[in-house]
Amino acid sequence: MCDYSLHLVASRPAKVGDKLVTTDFTRSITRGFSAVGEPDVAVCLLPGTEIAFEDEVQYDRAFSLFGKARVDHKVARFRQVNMDDPHVHHDALEFPGGQIVMVTRLMPGQRATVLQLPVSGQDQSRAREAVPAREHARTVERIAP
Image 1 (cartoon, rainbow, N blue to C red):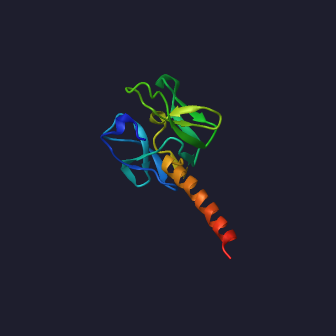
Image 2: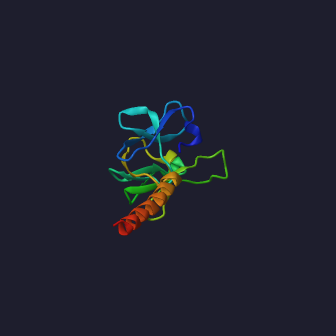
Image 3: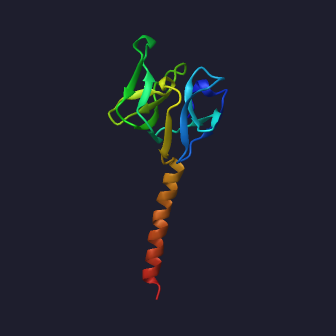
C-alpha cells in the first residue's frame, strides 16, 4: 500500500528484486519508496513484503531536536499501523528485534531491495487447488493398467 499522503503521486506495486530508494516526493508531504532511477513514481509495498537495506537504516526521531537514529538490522517487513485513524500515516517497517519505524521517518537516499512479497489470498487458493489435482493424478496412475 502507499500511505494516504501519496495519493497525488504516480505509483506502481513492488516486484521481487526491485531496487528501491527512500524518497522525499515533491507532490507529497511524506517520504516513501521509489525505484532507483524513477524518483517520481512511488513503489507501493503490501503488508508482509520483506526488504533488505544496503546499509544501516537511519531515521528521524519523533522530535527533530533529538536528531537521527539507527536500526541494528538491515532486513525489515513492511506493515501498516494505526489503521483505526484515517488521518495519520500507516506505512511502517518492522525489524527483527520488534522495532517499528514509520516509512515517512526514513532518511532519504537509503537503498533497499525487495526480497519477498506476501502470498495473496488468491495465490493460496490456487496452491490448495493444485494439491488435490496432483493427488488425483497419482490415484489415476495407480488405478490405470
